[in-house]
Image 1: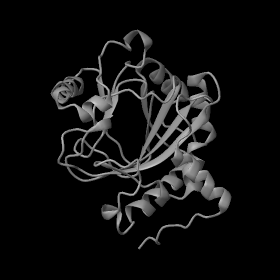
Image 2: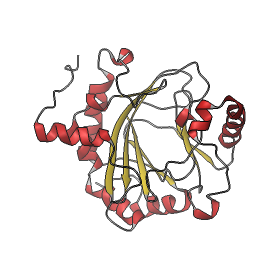
Image 3: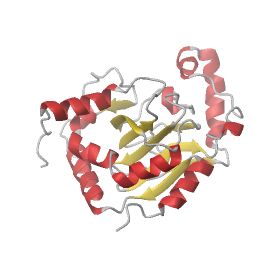
Image 4: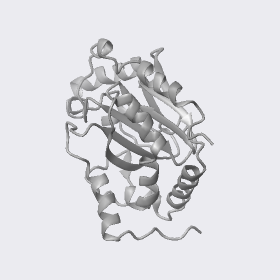
Length: 257
């Protein structure tokens, strides 16, 4: 059984040309792990009322990585076919930079932070893998990406205000909202509508955003891969996962009812 529903060569070419590629996970063990993670997290009894304790949380996004068993998360993130694909894209073996599970709900504010189109700056060599644990449609926060915006020749085509400007200077917010609207309607704007077992891989040096939720909720895993010398230090979420494994301190969530 192949790992992806599409050939690795096709996915690699899509990444090189468009900066984004979508497929389905076909590997039986990985599908079992995804189903297990989805079952545990979606059945967590107080998911919609979790305290906002993490400094990484935002009004529209809660980090719930601690609810997910680290063994299952890392078995997916470090699966050889996925690493081989990323190695082919980078030209060298990647570093797993971060592992996150996000839970998102609608909010009443204007778009915030990563809900604006933006580029990530974690590394020159950068791929993110998005794995939904619940269905993602047009109304509950799909990922959007401007195709080919990762290419150096197109890198300065769009002038993007910084996230700090978006959040802190109202006089720039109107322009940013207008730019968001323009980019969302751009012919090269790709929208990732997904369900369990689908996978989206994106070079997030390209222009992208998470669409603000209008209804429902969104739960997804996000893996980040970089070179061995990323611009920023390894993220705390990944370090916490390895700490749990090494200390045998992981306590599973409440049983599935």
